[in-house]
Length: 208
Image 1: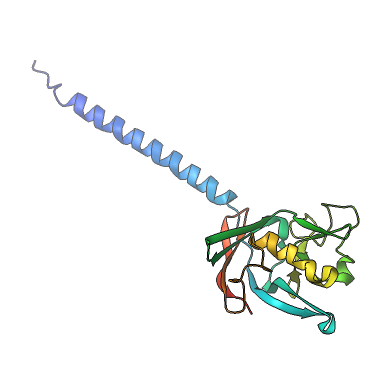
Image 2 (image 1 turned 120 degrees about the horizontal axis):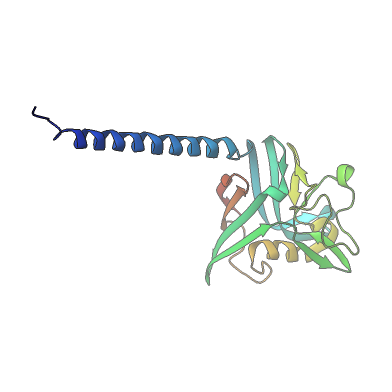
């Protein structure tokens, strides 16, 4: 009797290839599903950033270069989950500044965060005699939660004109001597929600 076995091996090979393809597709699909299930979502928030050249404080008693970040609306933001990057072009080239985590300046034996939530009723005095970390209104602190209507600000009202130290630390320049930092200058500012990697603010901010 004549046997026709020539086509058996190719058919078996094709079936094995199809089986392997289906298994790989299932593994990839499961992995993708797992990743999407654990992906962090960026909070929904509208922010407004300002830079000031010699903003007046104390009824005109002094003026200081200042930065503010206001949450106009949206869900509460834990500032420890945010990073701020600034890009400022002066005569030397592009200067990058950044703030991530608690960062402070010291004036007259007091420490204050380079940015803090300006709400004394909720947080009290943001300037501390000895603490360098751990103060709840400071940007980057685990208890520092920015809510709609809150404003993060550099500490000019506490340090007077020495507040330049705070904005200098943020921008990585000396605004008192850098003639390019003035009204009309442009500072690109990005704020990123670190857990999700999402940019929640990205704008060219004009100094006023």
